[in-house]
Amino acid sequence: MQCQELVARLDDELRTADYADVDASANGLQVGPATHDVTHVAFAVDAAVETIEQAAQVGADVLVTHHGLSWGGIDRITALQYRRTAPLIENELALYTSHLPLDGHQQLGNAAGVADVLNLRNRAPFGTMGGEYIGQRGQTIDEVTVGELCETLQSTLDTGGEEVQVLECGPSSIRDVAIVTGSGVDWLDEAVEVGADVLVTGEGKGKAYHEAREFGIHVVLAGHYATETFGVRSLSELVSGWGVETTFIDCPTGL
Image 1 (spheres, helix red, strand yellow):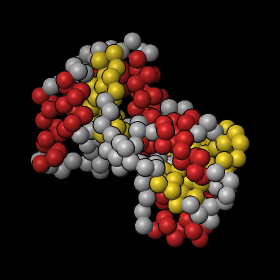
Image 2 (image 1 turned 135 degrees about the horizontal axis):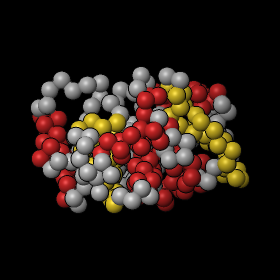
Image 3 (image 1 turned 30 degrees about the vertical axis):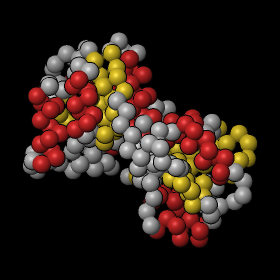
Image 4 (image 1 turned 90 degrees about the vertical axis):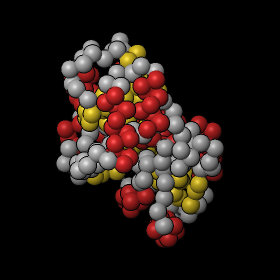
C-alpha cells in the first residue's frame, strides 16, 4: 500500500475534511511524501520525540497520532519542532494526525472507547463544535454511584499510576453520562442541557469546580492521555485489517 492510499482511506473513514474549519490541528498527512510504500504503521497518542524515535526503531513507515505537530501552521522549524521533525525526515517516517475527527468518531473514537468501558446504552453524539460532534453520551445499564463509575475507569484506563479524580457535585445515583475526552470541561453546560448526571473528561480547569456545584453535576477527570488512547488503538486494529503491520506505542503521561 502506498502512503497516499493509506491517507485517503483514513481521511475517508474519519471525515477529515468535515473538520477542516473546526479544528486547529492540521489533520491528515503532516510530514512525509505521499508516494512511499507502507508496510508497517505505528500508532501513538502524541507526536513527541519519544514516540517518533520508538516508531523509527520498530521500522514503521508511518506514525499515526492523535496530537500532531501542526496547530494552526508552522512558522519555523526550530527548538522542539526541529527535534521532532528531524527524526521523521531522517528515518523517512511519515506523520499522519487525527485530532477532533478521532475524538468525534462514533464507533472508533476516543469518547466511544470510554463509553465502551462504561458499557453505555442508548448512545448519541455529544459535544458540539462548529457543527460537528467531538464526544458521545449514553446511559449505564443500571444506576450506579459516581464512585463505582470512577472505579471502572481506574481499573481500565492507562492513567500512569495516577488516581481518577472526581468533583462529586451531582446526584447520589447516576445513569446519564456525557463524555468529551481530553480537555472537555467547556462542555459542562451542554452536559447539563442534555440531562447528564456526570461529565467524563480528561483534565479540568479551575472554573469547573464552582460550575459543577452550581449545576449539580458530577465531573470525572480521568486523565487527558488516559481518555485518548482509544482512538489510535481502534485505528491500529482497522489498519491491521487492511493487511498492514501495526504497532501501538504506549507512553502514558499521568496527566
